[in-house]
Image (cartoon, rainbow, N blue to C red; front, side):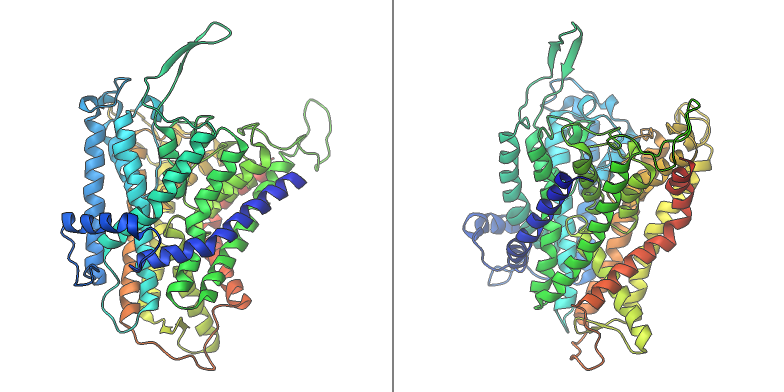
Amino acid sequence: MTVNGWIQIAIFFALIVACAKPLGTLIANVMEGRRNFLSPVFGPVEKLIYRLCGVRTDAKGQPEEQHWTRYAGALLAFSVTSAVLLYAIQRLQVWLPFNPQGFSQNNVSPDLAFNTAVSFTTNTNWQSYVPETTISYFVQMAGLTVHNFLSAAAGLAIAIALVRGFARHSLQTIGNFWADLTRATLYVLLPISILAALVLCSQGVIQNLHPYTAVTTLEGAKQTIAQGPVASQEAIKMLGTNGGGFFNANSAHPFENPTPFTNMFQMFLIFLIPGALTYTFGKMVRDTRQGWALFAAMSVLWFAGVVTCYHFEQRGTPMLEKAGIEMTATATQSGGNMEGKETRFGIADSALFATVTTDASCGAVNSWHDSFTPLGGLVPLFNIQLGEVVFGGVGAGLYGMLMFAILAVFIAGLMVGRTPEYLGKKIEQKEVKMAMLAMLVLAASILFFAAGSSVMEFAKNSYWNAPGPAAANINNPGAHGLSEILYAFTSATGNNGSAFAGINANTPWYNLTLGFAMLVGRFLMLLPLLAIAGSLAAKKQVPVSAGTFPTHGPLFVSLLVGVVVIVGALTYFPAISLGPLVEHLML
């Protein structure tokens, strides 16, 4: 590991810390309906949207609040409607404008359209297709980019609803979903995305509606260079922790990520809102120490991941006996493992990017995780399996970490033999059951789908187009092949969207099963958390006593980190042992 690599990691983290308080304060003010410096611009637009959409408001212009069941119903209705519209846009793209390459609906089969619609609706952005040869400009802009905004805004809305559950007492409402969705989009995602897109354009990220360019290379070969409105999608792709690339190479493509500066800037965008939301949490519960405690726990987990990944990638693959030349067991790859990495980024930025994107449920990649060393590739996999709580996605990281905080104070309560409390609310049977339900559902989705795909026989007909087990669609046998399957369903259930890239997922089996895994990972986690929010908001506040466990100091941070790691390790260790760990030992 080099000094330059450590400096870049330190600069990145310093930027996130510096922006957490100002942006976190803005988000708190926006989501609580308080006036802010953007109100003169977006305030009239917000009111117009409420009027057009039929959102009821009181005399002060504040939207009518909803019980958690109505809030959840609005979320589900919005998600189903937007998924159906995105499915239709894909299937009808041949008749829609801005399609200079003439892509037809045949490019997007029914199962692929289902997978993609679910993927972008759930903020997963898993892509089983090659974007530049499948999707028209209209679908990219009106379908995928719009969903990048809306799915991120929905995640932010859920996080704020859960925070209100902790901040309020003796109330039956947790906010208004339509208002939260509108405010998150107008005041947070849209203005930052506009600025980010301009920065990316200045660095060479393209933004046009030109047909693809046919050129002749120096060797005389013909090559088609894909064009398109990339910068606008790239900005919200990163800011909204979406991750779906305009090109198949994603952020390894020079039109999406041309320079080391844009590489650092994109990582900054990924962590920007998740980091700020911890301060928003502290601001809304009127104790900023609570927010910094969550930030500290996330930071510890992030740092452990990036150091591990960087170490093993820089160390490279241990060299064994070959061609009669005996090597020592500690001999390593000269210069580290550069396979699957862009030379303009190198090992440090590739390891940092891989850790950040899988910590934050973003899924964008600037190198191929499939080419990482076994333990280097284990880091992105395990990051997602932890529940995407290491800063996590927009909103998803905060509500995921709060779920673990509930379990942490419950365990602390068991240790001292008293009813656990968190932020003045007693954590009782209902809250613990809902938190455990969310965790168990995620684990079941990952492990059951991965196990089934490793051994299940497909129906042997032309529609399925893949007789034999699903494992036949992987490029590598043995432990690494199992890792590819496990990573795919981990990424889908965790709403991350990245892949080991060694698996052919564009088959009906994977399109459908991965689509269902995305739905499970999004909604069967959100609904229990909204139930927790409703339950907590209705509770009375308990005064602090001598027996109250403090939740803002190093002891709580340590307990929270321990709970996150132990739950993840106990749940997934057997599967990990058969994949990355076995592959490492085989080296």
